Image (tube, rainbow, N blue to C red):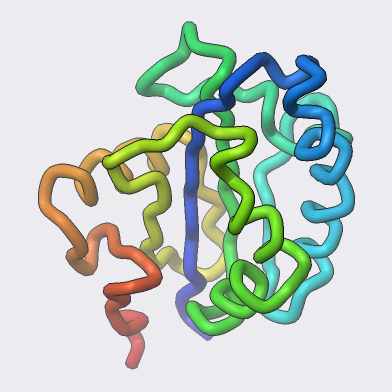
Length: 154
């Protein structure tokens, strides 16, 4: 496989990560991240200093002074593998309940794009993709699960 699928998503918590209102989410992070890591098609996940909380300690380039904005950046072999994890695993239950822990947003919070196999994107690259998706809508440069684009080698 010459390309893999990168995904970045961001969200703004309703309270700090150590606030009791976030307990259920925070306590499930390690389990859900491990589930993702072991899912068919998972290739790589950006990790912060505190592995228990995934990458919640990393700052989003667009809001570096806002500790309530948390990120997730992963690489998958293909769209369908990522879709299965998002909607068909235990992750789906947390997705359905996201408004419990996160502020609603009218802007896209997730961007997908194709990368050369072996490349490890960073949050700056993820921010560029998400910003472009927000500005232009889905394109081959950055797209969504609702509007995907084929892998360049297809």
